Image (cartoon, rainbow, N blue to C red; front, side, top):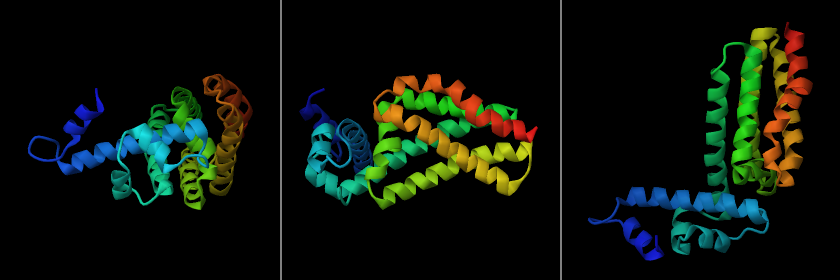
Length: 210
């Protein structure tokens, strides 16, 4: 589809889409472009111009929707992590046994990162370079994931303080283990790490609860 035809389709008014729908589509283009550009060249090198070229959206539109580059990154990160957390939570709830819930959620998480290398790099690697607000968002996401693990451990042993610490340690360990492959752009190797992570990080926690 040509740029001209895209512009016609997105034009608000009687023969086009409603303005709110146009803005939604433009936001999606910009956040997707931000994720891709950041994954390609890194957050520090990414400029608004890079994102505009990738998205095919005007500078005026960008600043109507976002205050600056950081705001656009945060929006892209929020969209990506909302998807990650939804998929991982669904996988967690898909199993009956507590230990299997942790394993299945982990396996699903690694498969998603492997399938979405831009998402993986933005959410695991580049988020550290995007400033304190981005790092706060990351901390919130890590806490959400830890709460899933804590819930499962609570069913196995029921020690709130220990379960919380163990869950946080597990999520931190998983992050450390996947960071380097993602930084090296080797996301394809992530699903193969699931069994090793389960054996070395998950199994000892589960064994304590039995």
